[in-house]
Image (cartoon, rainbow, N blue to C red; front, side, top):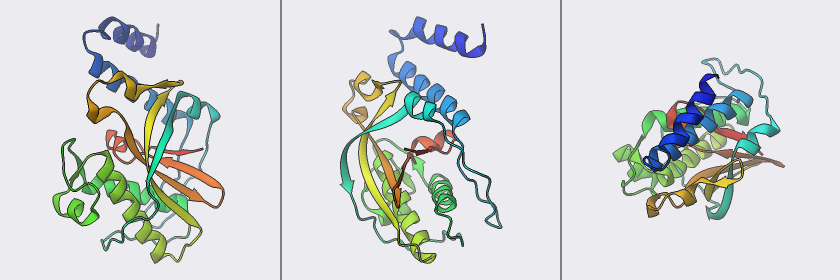
Length: 206
């Protein structure tokens, strides 16, 4: 029996007694599995990158069910983020790292739909993370004169192997989850800035 089998056995035993922990751990295990199957371009100081690979298995294990679009127009934001490249994959990763470096997750934070408030407080929930991420990425795209990219703020449910994880929670705070949708021509990416605080870059090509 490997470590994964032991983890699943443990979770099954304690599922009823520790339901919130079960859900959080299940999400974490699924994300780890997905990030091993799907890698994203990483930037370096000279903007060199590694290749991107994707797997259809990733979408089966962990994906998002979009409920509605919150905004199609990211806010304009003047910040220190700077990455000189026309490779949008690199800019998406840079914006994600910049977001997680500058924000701290606080569930009951305020001002999550105002990027200036977020920049001042440096705290946000999943709503604020997407607001901030999209504003940063918009700046980077504008700086590099890239116009073929659409940014959207979406409300979604987290799906693991076809199961809606948000429905497991009874707390209204967890009834859904906000993510960013980046469309480059006909290619769509789902980016999860807040859960990327777990130390993994959650950028999934659809």
